Length: 276
Image (tube, rainbow, N blue to C red; front, side, top):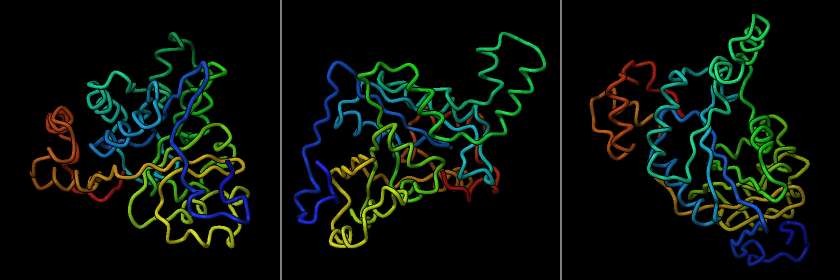
């Protein structure tokens, strides 16, 4: 089915059964982000996607240097990765990943203590932003031909998708699962696409008041909209709660809360105004 591609579209064309089958292969999710910290909203999104699209596993990939947050102060990568490990431990299909780890960590795993040239390459990689397209390609190197990749992302991040590195290519490499929320329409989702994938304004205009739910299948892009998973959680709220000594139970799992307290994360006032 091609949505936004026919002149006689009606509203029902924008919704189809969410049955995704990969004959002989697996549906695999990739969930990237700063995870500073990982919170209940992230876990709720992943669980809903896992169940609705029958994902075999979801890789949680903390970014060492998120491209859109290079000027922001992030907690050290190892702390963010440790919290991901703790938060995902109860779910065997959730897999913490070092795909975007700092070069010194990957170097310790793969370089075997080799010489200064390798160290120079590691330093160069540390300074390079973690582009999603690169991570997707690296992950897919281990895939079978019949496996299918789904990229999980929140709608606030998706609205900036056209500015991502090689965004158009990214849509060819994987399908998107986007966590929607009230206030966004199907037209908003379509209009956020890279220019060459974006439907004409006269096509999207009739859907500007239709809630962002269901699936959009376009030439060059497939987007599955996941609604009803909203959790009033943000990294900013968590940091503010830490700074004021408030409980974190409604934001993060107990093991993550305990880790934050034990390590002393987010106590500095400068950490409270950044958004994950």
